[in-house]
Length: 356
Image (cartoon, rainbow, N blue to C red; front, side):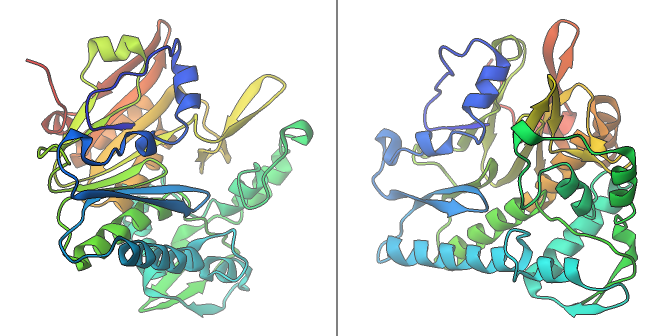
């Protein structure tokens, strides 16, 4: 996805693969321009978090301090990372992953919230979204210790079976703010944490009385109120020319929570074969179907984030059917014999900017 202050095309990009590589994370930082020719009341705030960057464009109210706002945002992001980053050895999720079977762990409010969102989407997707794939994520080289491409070795069937034995989201119980591990399960909230963090930054802005803003972390977006132009926020879904010519690809958003999951965002190649970070909990292997990206609009960004992963795991047909069944607004881009194509649910039509 790309955010727009005015409609800007991806010029000189000849293929979707090049386009996706060029915009591994949506190009919000390039397009959050102060005022966009309208008002100087909007400010841009950005920083590093969760292995990527965050960007905020917000209307700065009279008397508000941009420095104070950024300090509050950074403080909140540190709290979330300390709760659920597998890259921090002292985080709650790292502590849980080391916990012996049968033991319990007191957890914080952030962990509770993300666990509950995860359980909801896990149930609704029949396990396609499964944050207990942590051992598989590590095994395939997408965990805290990244696999080096020149030494990458594909896991054996035995290794995959062993890692799958550490799955079992249903085997974790939550009682109040206490989590109990019934089996040797290994959690990974990377498919929902960025979305949750976007929601929490939006809440920080709300606490400052800010009602017009856009927040983005690694491609997950929350919008409220109006853009610097004075109208709705516009977000363009990354798509090849063929798709843009055939379908609308610009979203017109007022109060919306949006996330995109793509098989192009994190992958490596071994012997000419590509292995993506999207792991199928059933097979224990990276997905291999033709669905390349899913954009989801939901009640909050955490849910949109989790749903995008679930649908990408399921693939084009099963994912699209489930989205229709539960009334989700989604936009899919997928491979066909003739190249890349797209489709979207009826619910998504309300958000698409369709030219008359």
